[in-house]
Image (cartoon, rainbow, N blue to C red; front, side, top):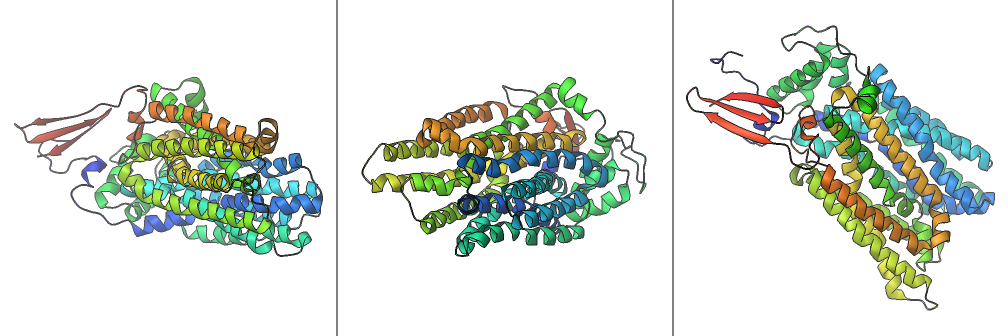
Length: 520
């Protein structure tokens, strides 16, 4: 670029501070539609916690069979996530979301019509694959359509809808528990087919991801979408330039259809596993770690087995257990809404560390109170109240940080060429860890007591806090393409410098390996 030119590239941060920009309504609408697919997973988690009570009574199954029933969906969903990661690079993000809704629809219908345990497990397979699709693709699509100024807010929406789905599932438990035993749990599960088919149809109104369009050489369509979803024309141009660079398209190319020299998905597995750069290795470890610890700290034990936890705490009535569980869902939903408004103000790192710190305190409190109750022959009202408060505190602190940030962070740190597959691997780790926790919690509680199980989760949460503190740099306010430069330095923050040259009136801004020049 010539020295005398007035038009120069800037960092996206240069566009934001000068004036307050309203949230892009079109980008918000697209993100909301995509994120609503997370309702499917949330509803299944919530509804199964209460339905399990009645399934056990109706089908005369054991605790081990209930554990498998509740947890197996998390082992099925990685199959869907893996397929979705590959499929989304082939047919696009939008149609992959549509498929997620259709597959879950089949699963919900089969579960609602189940005559026995074996058929119910068959329905769980389809539901799990559909959830795996949605679990992967919703945050990927949302991160790719979100303007930088709102990316944290919009990318956290899948977690908002997931928690909303959990709350609806809990309410469904309470509402349909009044039906005859034979029909109650079947209606609870089968009614999940309704939102899945509605969402599959609504998603067709969304545009395709601009990053996917550029990767396929459909530059003209990508430009139209970028102008709609960006906060300004300048931001749209810069985002397009960054994507062009990643996909090997010349920056001065302005054709509507181009030939892409870098094939998305080609060589990804080698770059991730065999020959990663220091930055990619750091990103990969960070993604795996944040997904593992989000589940290993016991969230599914609390959400899926809330009725059992409240029973151990001294609540015997089914109605009271389900009402207490509704309170857990309400708290989770309210606090994840708080998180969405703090992500782009406070930043990912501070919220995450605060959240995990809260989990440690909540888990220790719950473990101590449940141990006291378990070893006391008298009814200790204060210990029961403390247990309920600790469960609600755990739900709140998880939802304000660890829950939403896991998906926001992992979906934005991978560079474009690795994003779909990288996020899919993270989703697999997330679901497998969740499956192990949910399929072993009852057995673990029987082996080391329920208080001992939560002491174990508290220990894992302490390790999680140390991992997050040392391994996860802040990503707030950076473009998706700039974030890669923040990684590779495990023990120190990335360097940033600014130098001024008064002679020619130019200011040079450097962030990691990118330099932007602007006129004074």
